[in-house]
Amino acid sequence: STIEFTGALHATIVKQVRLKNPSSSTLAYNAILVGRDADDFSLPKGNTITIPSTRQSFLTVEFTIRFLRPAEAILILISNKVDGVNGATMTFSLKSEVKNIEPHAMIKCRSPCYEL
Image 1 (cartoon, rainbow, N blue to C red):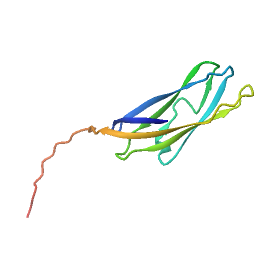
Image 2 (cartoon, rainbow, N blue to C red):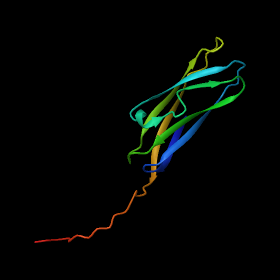
Image 3 (spheres, rainbow, N blue to C red):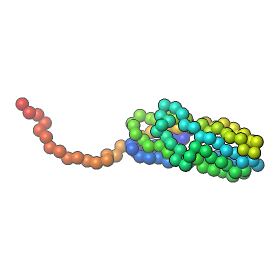
Image 4 (cartoon, rainbow, N blue to C red):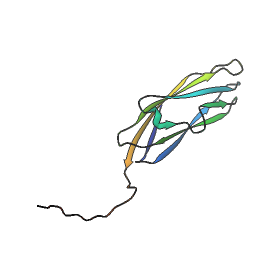
């Protein structure tokens, strides 16, 4: 599955990954970001998540668009044993795209175009 972060240059985009637990046991995961641009993505609420039985939880992923080129990383969720039960390892592809560029400020200046 791919999670797309689209927005303006220098914008911070926050996405939430919904994780459901259909089992009768609690599941816990450690989240790891890997890849070329993994340092540009972050997990602001921490890299561990616990999902109670038959419930759902959300993992927050944050990204600030710093470059015009698309950024790519992989989010890996590795299960921790809770109550003797392991969940499946999950991976998500993280990609960014710049939709527009808005200036931080505008500066007016005058200068001659040509001088001898």
